[in-house]
Image (cartoon, rainbow, N blue to C red; front, side):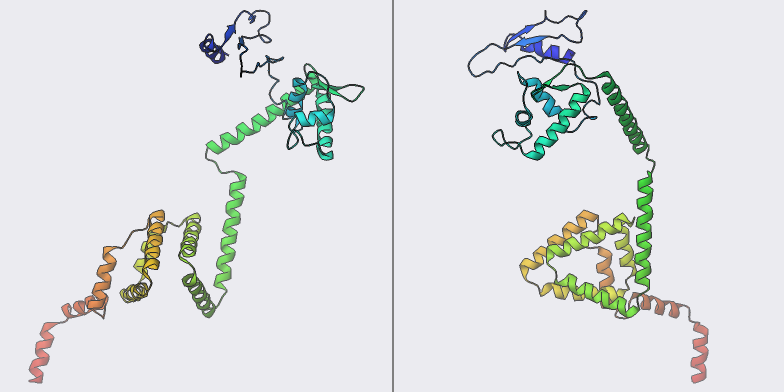
Length: 332
């Protein structure tokens, strides 16, 4: 109320007149308030003050059917009692003001009005017209208050449990279901023969190469998101995959893919580069690593491989030179 009174004082004069004498803070504190009067001029509609200032208790409308508030407001705005058909239109339950109410809308409005009547918010006359009444029934208010308190308590408990970081029963059950599903998938894959594994890999690789650039990007994103949901870090997985490749396999993949890429059309090359860049940026994958280029160059320069070169050096360094001299003297 302090905020409303402050804003009305700011509007007093430039927009209208603020009447403070109508508020009785001693005898009618809950049923009286400041009133603001707008001068009647062209283009400004006069809004009558509401007949009831005190709002209904919390939980009143939650205990009633959904259209209750619309019908109740329509009853309060109408100067005379109205029929159900008129109330449906005034409550904006129809598509337009000129659209007649359907039979289902009339049935819903009738059941809602009966609920309002039992709550003491509406009454029906002998000729079948309805009008708004004063205060609701105390028994209904008590029931609505208890239901609202129970809902607030449940919501507060759920919020406290969520903010505490504790796992809910639903989260625990969901995690158990996902774990069981993952175990079934692993068991199914392990039950296939190596030939079937290879055949499925070839089919998936062929389908992936035949897909469009956008479809390939979506597939890679879906696989990465699924691994992330299973707790796999995408950059760590990528680094582990690179370390698992031998120099020979890495050089073969690098040269073969470079040859395939060079044979593509220029627009397709640009689209693929843009797609790869978006995927790397999205999942934090590194761009072209310098160590990969070094590994490929070493393997191409030394076909036997860096590992074989190091083993040769080790064998030469550990060979006994004195035994070589003895063998040479015997041969001489």
